[in-house]
Image (cartoon, rainbow, N blue to C red; front, side, top):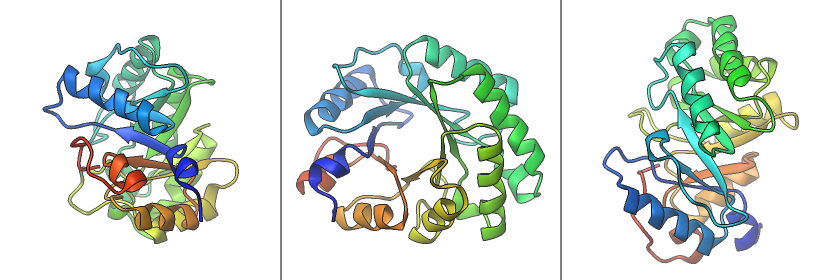
Length: 224
């Protein structure tokens, strides 16, 4: 089993509530630093922020619907990187995935990749709970072909649900080790976090990180 410190270094400590304030984001960043998480993950409108040394910054893009044009997503990603983001978590057009338009999904991701080139880390949110296994494999392959660094299960906002061990395992089987797999959405306990890691997750999107790492309640997150 991974240690507490090892789990912490896999966590993107997340706050994406629409009603979040700058004070809430400041508190999130302070808590992330205290807990030793890998990054803080926030909305682009909250930029710029000041980070303590060693803490990465992830920012969402095309969130949460993915129904933005590729040009808008690219502009959002580029602006976020210019304002300090180390990582961009973009949402694909889920409808295109359900229609098996994988070339369109790949083109969408590639446009954002071009606007936020390496060393920016690009994570691709596929909303796995809405997709069939075939569709999960198809969009994961599209993400790999477009030059993404991670595939990610969920926004945490879709009523269909968040991460599952099955989806994480399938995503890892499809793209690992070339790409990482981020499990997000509904991970609220140490046991759930460990199960996602065992299934192949190499990053976790979590709002209630303190509860997972210390067993005590922390600041209110996004419901992520």
